[in-house]
Length: 145
Length: 145
DNA sequence: AAGATTTAAGAGTATTTAGTCGCAAAACAA
DNA sequence: TTGTTTTGCGACTAAATACTCTTAAATCTT
Ligand code: SF4
Ligand code: SF4
Image (cartoon, rainbow over all chains, first blue to last red; front, side, top):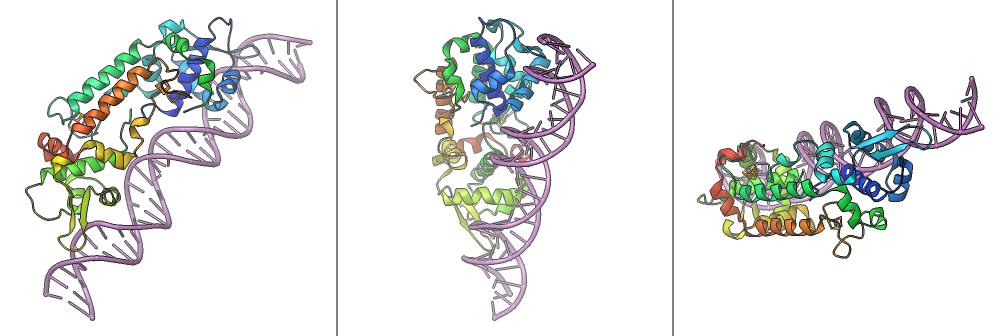
């Protein structure tokens, strides 16, 4: 059951790390994050570019450059990230991938899936990076499960 | 959000089709199913082999051969299929793929995810092929969403 | 026995996702 | 201006997933 792609998970972990560094001033380099979280530098870079282009991050090149959250971590929600990295239609997906589906002639799991999906979306909608950063220690961001 | 692999969805659609044919006696050929549901014959074959090896289906070669459910459709549940085709650990997966995770130091979505996963599993556990077959018309099994 | 039908099995190809590499562009420092 | 740091970007490679093809084995029909 792969809900999120690797790229999204990496991006998320990195963003949460950023959220835990909120007392630091200025930019945090991708190199540092890559090293601290043990994520491929170039892979992260690509993900961050997408996030920068979509207004989540601000980036700056050159010495002491790096990236920074574009808004306070309290105002960035899981849903924003997921929508950007997984696509806007992320929550429109059907469970069984059957045909002509939808409300019209729903399969047995349709009603359930609709509710479950809505719950997941809501959870993503109310969970901020700040909240995640507060609950997670740096150590736990390092190795993947 | 890809919950189930293509192979699993195909297998599921095919099994539901089988369930709708319960008044027919004898075996249903993979060729027929492949044609009726517009799914690649060889791909289906592979999935069916797995299901046969795991006791869901009974198969028979030669003219008028094919496959048949090994138990009444009322006694085959979504969960059985998913466990076989996606692996036994399907519901053990973590949402964010963070580290050392689990109960110890859960991330903010952990509790929610635990509940959502349990609900999904329960739904899969109580939904039988018969139930799905009753709710779905053959037409709707044909084209994928 | 010979040929037709149908699943079993495994090799082979294509597409998608994941991850790597190299260099250009921006900014700074000396 | 020259060199260094750091992001931007596109091409490249690797692995996983999805799909196809070929041949064998079982069973029936004649
Ligand atoms: S009825 Fe709903 S859940 Fe079921 S296959 Fe169709 S869209 Fe998916
Ligand atoms: S705390 Fe739970 S949901 Fe969160 S990353 Fe860890 S295992 Fe996954």
